[in-house]
Image (tube, rainbow, N blue to C red; front, top):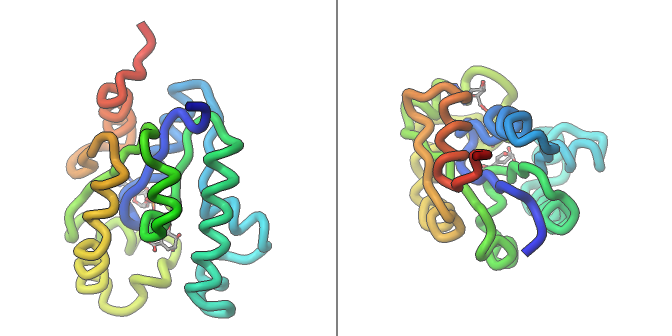
Length: 171
Ligand SMILES: Nc1ncnc2c1ncn2[C@@H]1O[C@H](COP(=O)(O)OP(=O)(O)OP(=O)(O)O)[C@@H](O)[C@H]1O
Ligand SMILES: O=C(O)C1=C[C@@H](O)[C@@H](O)[C@H](O)C1
Ligand SMILES: [Mg+2]
């Protein structure tokens, strides 16, 4: 099956973008992120798309961005945190090298508080994150070939764990 060498899924703040970039460097390949593709295509930040156009519109853009990236990218691909909620996207991911980057709520709130605003966590981030994970965990697990914990690991250590889990280390 052609397509990305690694596909990263997981909740906001799991490190898909940070670890994905590192992993692409280690594998000497390209990095692509569907959130960044959507920003580039629309000329708008993700939070602005949510506010101006609504979440359903964002999800439609995301569906298309995932399809294009899975068809056209052979390096490391990070998906938006909510992409796996779409049934067609889950079907597209079947049999591919998908990694679920996992962490607990305390760490999630610490990390997502640090940088870019996440529209879905704007109000009561702790409770919002917990509810989100309850809904999403079965889908992350369903699409994943392997689950890698990001708790207590630096992004470099997470990248190493992914290389081991997918047996991608060069001899
Ligand atoms: N293993 C880690 N340990 C500590 N901090 C981390 C780790 N991985 C990522 N971070 C930090 O957590 C924040 C979120 O990381 P990142 O943006 O890569 O997450 P993401 O999964 O791409 O989130 P989103 O779904 O919102 O795009 C960043 O500030 C990043 O530096
Ligand atoms: O988990 C989510 O639903 C999201 C995660 C981010 O990657 C962005 O795609 C957006 O902020 C929504
Ligand atoms: Mg990201």
